[in-house]
Amino acid sequence: MKRYFHTLKAEPLVSRLSIIQLVSYFAAWFSHVAVFTLLVKMDASSIVIAIAASMQFLPGVLLAPYSGALIDYLRPKPLMLILLAIEIVSTAMFLTIDNQSEVWLLLVLLFIRMGAASFYFTVEMALLPRIAKPSNLQNINEIHSLIWSFSYTSGMAISGLVVYYLGVYTAFAIDVAIFIFAFIFLLKTDIALGAVGVKKKIVSMWIEAAGYFKENSKIIHLMLIHAAVGLTAYDALVALLAKEIYAKEISIALAIGFINAIRALALMLGPIIFGTWLNPKRFVWMLMLQGVAIIVWALLFENYYLSLFGSFLAGLFSTVIWSYSYTLLQKNTKQEFYGRMVALNDMLFLFTATATSWYIGTSHDMGLSLETLTFILGSLFFVFGFYYTWVRKNFLWDKS
Image (cartoon, rainbow, N blue to C red; front, side, top):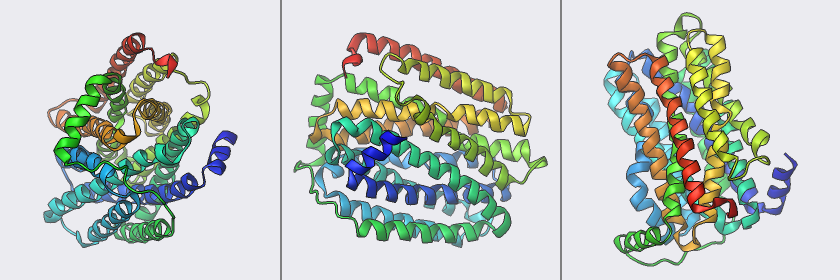
């Protein structure tokens, strides 16, 4: 942990942005339990739950061609403030939904809010290499994943309790207040950076990016491997587990909150345990162990308390894979292409997460058990492990 504190001390702007991350991520996950609890109470089908889960990722896929170019074209701070404002308004609109006929509105608002959140995330990840020393990037990415995991853990756990004792709409109201605090803090943060300097039409910028891809094929492999983390988009799975198995033992809100909180605790511990040990040669073991952990979790579904342990295992390697693959991409990308490459990277990741959410909902609706569909997800990480081994051998990432 000392290395993280030293990095934050050496990078004061990163420290302030990290505080904003902590607050805004907490807000995002705080209302997450409320949204899915509301859907389950409305007796939403597996397909609707899957659509709601996919709305957290699909906007990023659709916006990527525009967001990447805009990030390289516009100043970061005004763009980030606009995106936070959109999150505030869309979250406030959740308070107007009170019956099943308005589920469509909930899905639209989720799409808008998560589109803004995804765009904000991409802006920040493209900003970090511009404001931080290259030697600090891996630590900063690990700090980012720790913040995400801590926010996920505390947000889910506290929200589960708030929803259980105070109700869904109280959780939404608190969420709006938290987002407003993040907006004010960002407003008072000095980000003395302009646009990257790229002043071209969007089509021209992507044609230029295509040429960059052609000359640097290693980047597309890095993006595909990073996209594997999208297979851990378990939101629909957890909601279905709570609805079909655990509702007999514990309230739906607490079941969703605690399973996600335990998994997120593991997400936070992963980089601390494996961060200094990891290198390009050892990275394959993270992919393989992630697959094993997911399969073990599937075998423990029927018992709620054993499932908590399984969700912990399923989260232990995810942020390690996320942060390390992101670092490799950042270190191998030229500054003038940061926005476009990060946007494409996030698009592939979010596409995988969207596809995973749809796969969970539709396959279960067609009769596939939750255990079987989760076993398949775990098995795919072995495929990515073999793929990474092949790519490392051919592209010599050991020198990165």
